[in-house]
Length: 411
Image (cartoon, rainbow, N blue to C red):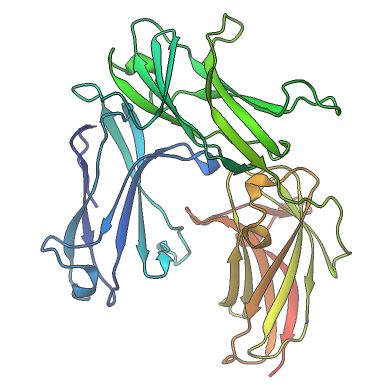
């Protein structure tokens, strides 16, 4: 791929030139480009573009010749209300079966997103319109006029990101260094447990501070703070205001309401695992045990595995659990890849002390020799392909995977 090192500016699009080398016959492909900031669960997409993959002659991927280099282009529209600053350009590819994985030079999985580099976006030559798609608000903050808000989703699970946006117009004068936000759930007073039913935090300006905005220009500024996994279930109101530390506070703007949902949580193991373990993962969890429905499955059987995790706290991102059936040559013969509890307990929602029961099913291949095989478990970030660090007795495990069983597969 190649892109100009010059800044881009609305209303012109960002153009990415791509060179492809097919190693085999291809199906239909879609390329997806994003401009984003942040990381982990707090990644924010500011602009995006998706299109069918074609080359310079307009031929789609199924018509390309194997082994022949071909060129093409992809685009992202740059809206007038995109704040100036530096963004990360990310590319993903999808086919008929979903997102395609990347392979690193050493043959390992590289995730589903390819970071292409940084893109500098300059302020447009003229202001955006009135941002009519936002819900109107009218408030004055130092150096800013609040035009409108993009409320969060009406329902969100505790522990998940809460995306919302603010429509702001730059005015003369200095602005605050950051914004404060508060989510008040139910009554604002303290609950019977003595804990106030709310969450309070700070929002940093990104990808630039209002000091870099031309006076009179309007931008939609995006945020995605993480909700506490311990918030009570019920309706909550989100408010935002400029933060000056201990200084005077400007008026708060109500962004909207959200209904916080809680999933069921267990604080004790439902049973003593057949295979006790003590493997910590990423500082946010511990694998305390595992169960196998059978230690001597037959070729072609389903291998039923239950993992027991104990949360040490929420994770910074949503990680995928992998379970691998591995042969003596370290080849992966079968695997299961899923968020914990089949996706019902994402790692960002984990609360300290809770137990997560995580079931996986592997199909033992019918066409393989009978014999002894190993089972490994671990976690990884599916977007970037990076595994979470695993430790046992204070020692980091090789390849960040834990062997939890040796099984004998019967013919």
